[in-house]
Image 1: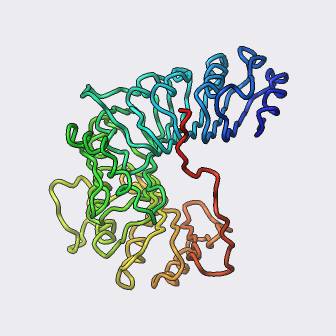
Image 2: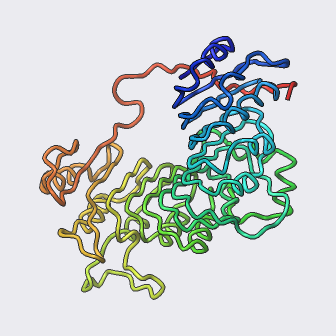
Length: 393
């Protein structure tokens, strides 16, 4: 069920017993109450998924939503996009019942640790903004069921306060890679005070994202990361360090990191008798990501001709063994110098670029068109979440 006008939602309350997946979009609802959900409260036995998107909405109009959700026994997933939400409001949600939670706010501050402390059954979380302000030092918070984490790179400092033993799938990204999001947020006086007192391990500098907090989380939680998606400004050296600490990776996607021969060389599998293999005592494996099955490179590659092909070819070991997993899929931007050789390699293994004819253990190549090639798409400006401070909250 999806409604936009207050009258629509008031009328729809009569059928609340059938609600399962609901989305509310609120715009410009100031005091006093401009709708009612009284008939729906304690009358939504099937409601499982709820999305709330708000802009310029007064507290009294939001309170009905939180009461409705608290009286929904089957609710498990909440998406909350609000330009003015804060910690006190989020704590009114039935957090202990949720398995999936997505949060995004444009203004104010949120103590994510205080919110997460009530999320004992959480399996997936997505948090984008604003910055988290943890007022007091505390011991790490244990979330034993959380397997999936989707977080903006400039919020990863909160990982210093978490223990996530079941974590498997991680996405770290920059919201709007072309915008200086971090620089804009650093102008907030409260954030400067926060950094002065707490010094989070994960910071963003002119050189990009430092993955120290994420690496510390992996070591502290003793978790096994299988899927990692990176779309954050970071150096190649920082990326190599991160991959060194995520040897269990099965799927890896990289965007926004300039990759050179240096990283490709470290990802190339060497045979035991290969004299060119570097011997590093601290490395358990001779190359990064030894168990990688899928690799997506949506990022600039400034490698010499043949280096990418050599790395990919070295990772095709059929059949795979306990210590040797074969790469079965590569996604790469169109135009790379090694593309013709990679296409031949894919055809030789029984798979084409679209996966047709893929045999068991085959290698599949997917070529992604570069932006700007082909037909031009018209750009429609999105006015949906324009920021505007609401005086009523």
